[in-house]
Length: 200
Image (cartoon, rainbow, N blue to C red):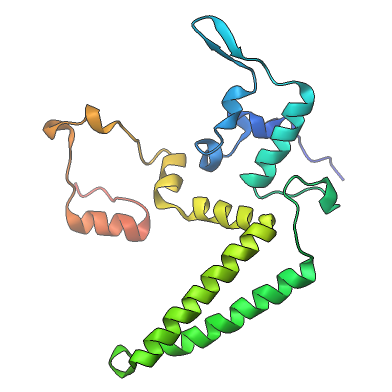
């Protein structure tokens, strides 16, 4: 059996502190990497380079917080530690699922048949779900990291920026001549298909 070839990320001591070994989807969010090698202002060192222990901590922090990667089997070795046991987490998730099922029954009723009582119940269910999810994110940080990571991965702008399909420019640098308005049908297809087809 052949050995798995080492990637550039595998060879890096602290891959989650290096922009070149971080996913493009995450790069813009990981701002603390700028301080790793120290910061100078007008030739004067204002923030010293991090020591090895600090780099190790920050690398693990970034891996967990931004990458939603929790390699440590023993939770005590993680930085983002759960404040409740996994059985309680599972119980809360189950409660959320049940409330969502109740709310879905109301959502499935056609709009002209719902009553004020139905709408109020749906609003209360939504409030309950949001409160329980907020609580779960606070006491079970792994879930919070996974949710934020999934949101970044779903983000239309973030995905297209990472694949160089979108180029962000400063608003101040734009003028009437630099703005191009595509045909709305083409833009609609872009949103649906994820690309603009050449009309020529």
